[in-house]
Image 1 (cartoon, rainbow, N blue to C red):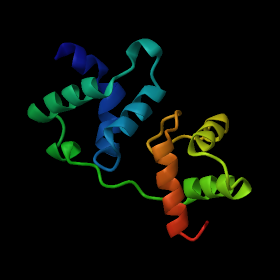
Image 2 (cartoon, helix red, strand yellow):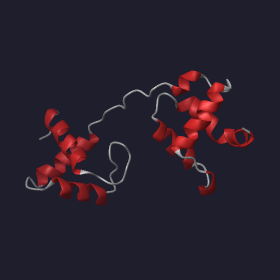
Image 3 (cartoon, rainbow, N blue to C red):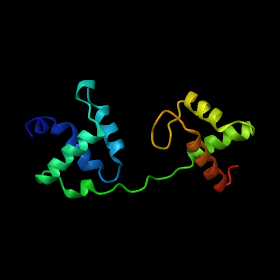
Image 4 (spheres, rainbow, N blue to C red):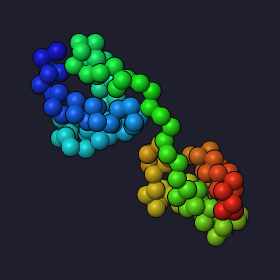
Length: 131
């Protein structure tokens, strides 16, 4: 617990402010953004630390509540619809490659695209009337 208390200033303020509004992976990314490489957190390590602080009464139990759904915007479906509109015969894998070349992040924030994600975005774009 001593080591945890030494690092508390790195993560406790962020957890208090961001949870449960953001998912844990987003909270970890924000915390690690300000830390040197040697002091970075993993999601599982942060969850263990938060559970210990909640158990000991240092953090409210509400920080462990489930995060709500993310707000959906139409930016990614619009990009995918534009790519598909420019080349109607393009494959899902080719759209993945183009999005990765554009350094566009997936809906979950990752850098590597999967055809299933592109298909989901194309379906959403169609529902929104973009295609």
